[in-house]
Image 1: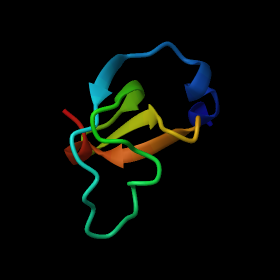
Image 2: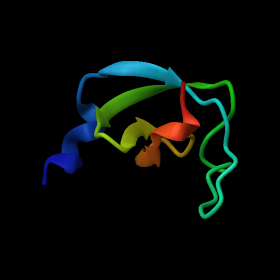
Image 3: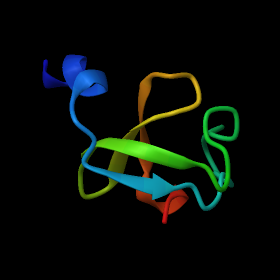
Length: 65
């Protein structure tokens, strides 16, 4: 259960949210366009960041620059 300590893990890099227009999911309530987020983990398809709720969430890379 490696995901349980991601919030306290050192930041890998920072990314900026470029858009919140999702076809299937509602992300505009947890991501803000233009805001910079700390990346805690990354896969080929997803970026795991600390979002506006203060918790780690996984989002498609298409939302970030």
